[in-house]
Length: 186
Length: 186
Image (cartoon, rainbow over all chains, first blue to last red; front, side):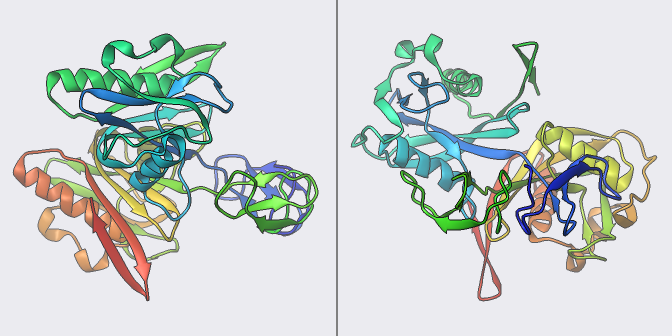
């Protein structure tokens, strides 16, 4: 951020009075521009014992596999965002169920919030942001080609819970230091 | 938003190619400025059977009662944001525990994510954004003077769960139509 979205004058980094963190503050009108983490809403859609996965047609991680997930929009609920992403990426209608995982992705300034879901029918397809969409048994999941650490975490916890016959919510922080992931489970 | 934060030229509202919603797009450099919901992180701090509440010293809802909660910052985890807010608003050290409630506050473009917490000691005080801070038994909670619907929801579910000896996560959407709250539980 270099310019004020309200008046177009340059912004400078400083700690506003009563605050404790540096913010972008307009040198003209004084507006303080806060920046906050964004929510990625997603789900693990299930049909019988199979899981719906999408091969990404866009960066980042083009060609890698993921679950339906994306940026939550203003004016929608988390669960509706997860269902919308399923429709957009996999042309799939889902019923969003229990909360599966919350992952704080610290460097990316994101919180990934992932639900369990049930496919309402098998009439899905390949959305504009996907190269391939399919239903996979646990043994068919391409673990070495999963796009994101948060998605691998959600999938592994989903499967472990399913084997145990429970539906828990799982919490993890993911950070990056010296090029390596630093994991903290809560 | 009137000007581009990247180059200072005016922005216009339009639907970018491949998108389905209007965005602020710079007429000069073409940058698309997405706007997404912000997270309010909070907790219900407990000491023995009492709950810590804060009387707000700032707008909105100055003079009304709430729990420690506020905007999550870039680079922090949800649970750490809830603990930081307890320290800022009530000078209180807490252990953040299980997830209590997620409330989609649609018109405000916010998601309120509220945890259970335990006070680590009773050496709390009145933070800069509070007028009063205290520990209250269930029967002493000033229900008619609670600042936000999401906070009332979280407190009532916290107490009901505590009576039942369970720790569930509760989901609600709050919207506003014609000046009245429209509630949807999930």
